[in-house]
Length: 89
Image 1 (cartoon, rainbow, N blue to C red):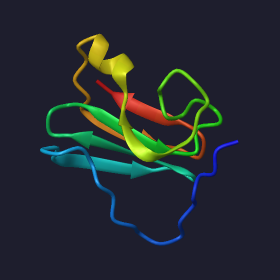
Image 2 (image 1 turned 45 degrees about the vertical axis):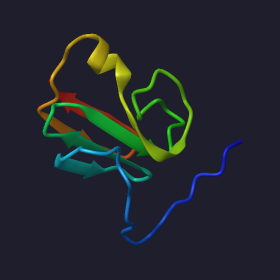
Image 3 (image 1 turned 135 degrees about the vertical axis):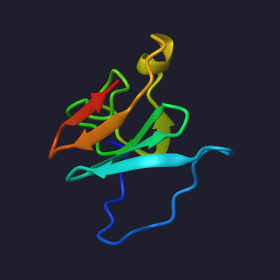
Image 4 (image 1 turned 60 degrees about the vertical axis):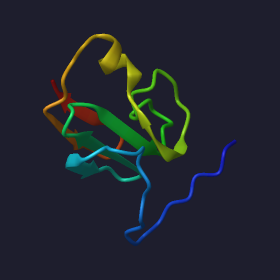
């Protein structure tokens, strides 16, 4: 099992170059951000698929949700719940 750090305090996160974040939301163990370009990036605990990558893999690195990009969907808003992520496109 991969070790995912759970931090109780804010931490600096490096996103891919040239991304500007327009919105962010935090669940109990995961985080999601929307970029000004309408893309969704998620990271953290993914046991229930809440990261949106089509699996139950956790990640300490922000990863773009490719499912939305492949369908040409523009993300407007994200809200994370305890073990869920809601996205308005």
